[in-house]
Image (cartoon, rainbow, N blue to C red; front, side, top):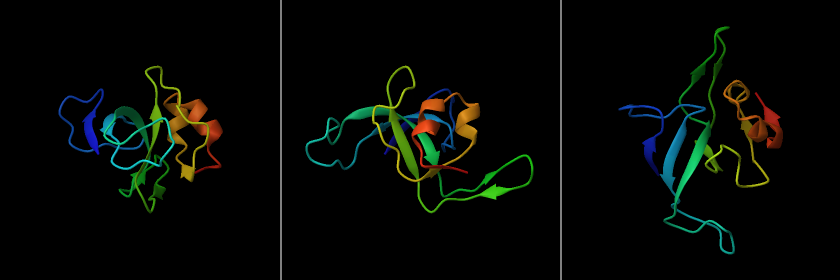
Amino acid sequence: MCIRILGASNRRYAHIGDVIVAVIKEAVPNMPLQRSEVIRAVIVRTCKELKRDNGMIIRYDDNAAVVIDQEGNPKGTRVFGAIARELRQLNFTKIVSLAPEVL
């Protein structure tokens, strides 16, 4: 659950590439992240369509984020699913290198 969008004063919704402060709602047992923990994450997929400069529209089936540390590096070693090419332009290159597919 998103608490705050970092870098945006009063924006209501987050888009791909935004860094958010969030709370973990559900977690797998025996993992370093526990339920109700406050974390930072970057949005990698949204159901809301993303319009590129060339006119292409990209829409995903789910909303997803990658947990990051204070420097912007991913805390995990795997990323599931496709991510948008715009993350490379926003200097999240380590997340892009972990992703199996970049659209």
